[in-house]
Amino acid sequence: MNTQTILQTYINNIIQINTPYGSGSGFVIGKLIITNSHVVSGLKEVVISAKKIKRQKATVIYDDQVVDLAFIALPPLEIDNPLTLATEAVHDGDIAIAVGHPYGLNYSATEGIVSKADRLENEIEYLQIDAAINPGNSGGPVLNVNGEVIGVNTFILLNTQNLGFALPYYYVREALDTFNALNTTNIIRCFSCKNLIEEANIENDFCPRCGVKLDVAKQRRLGYRPSGTVALIEKILASMNVDVTIARVSQRSWKFDEGSARINIIFYENGIIMADAWLCNMPKDNIEAMYDYLLNKNGSFNYLHFSISENTIILSYLIIDSSLTFEEGKIGLQRLKKAANKYDDILIEKFGATRPKRDENEF
Picture 1 (spheres, rainbow, N blue to C red):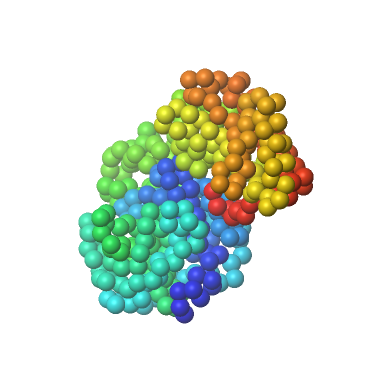
Picture 2 (cartoon, helix red, strand yellow):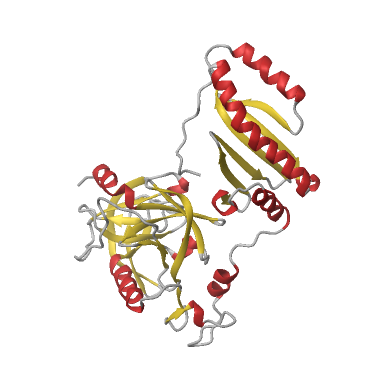
């Protein structure tokens, strides 16, 4: 199969994974999502989305920092063309197709070859591939021409061109067999003694077998805990019945939908908190009448204002972190939430503005 056919055939297996620390990729094998340990960032709860999976929370049930693997529990999902692990050895020169979500861009596939099938790094063998992979590809599958998983995109060397490394399929098979044999979940692999440890048996974040401190156990126990202005913003959002975990794009940005409108919030390093609702695209006609309408509304608004960026009409709420209080922030964001879902319809119906296209799973 060629690269386009492979992507079309197996696209429903490819998962996007988000944490407050970044985004990565994963893929479905059986009833599990396979990804890198560094993609889940030591957290027990992550956010996943896919063609057939609406953006939702999911639980990391296996975390192995030794070979950089993690397993996530898969929500109920029927896949027409499930992925399988390769059964035959990979050789130098074999075709390698890397699939994932580089830089958060959904469903990208690049083709190259296996430059070296057994590159040894820190006592672990990797597939060295020249298929272009970038941040966000981590955790995604490397496929052969038959659509079988031959590896997991794991890392690249900085300041090099098309020099990537993937964990071979046999490490994945070994981890799956060992994990499934335990018939339990919430497993951590100790990076020191290499034993699999049930999270319930860990006391004070120390490995019960060798006594080493397990930072991943602490991270899983505590979860992500924002502080300062970020914590205040998330407290305000939670009070507005916004699922903060789902809305969180990064440690300083959030997105959520209100009716047909999508609201973006960014807390900039200079202290500005900008909440924007990208309502609709400019109409071809009635532009002067629409400008008058927007200017009149800006004159009567409190907290909010309309603006236009290129072809997009935006409704915004802006505040400085030093001025943000729970009460002020909630008033402003609630007004934006309510108005965004109102004015996009008005602009479309009254002036012929058009609704922007967007990927419902892409945040």
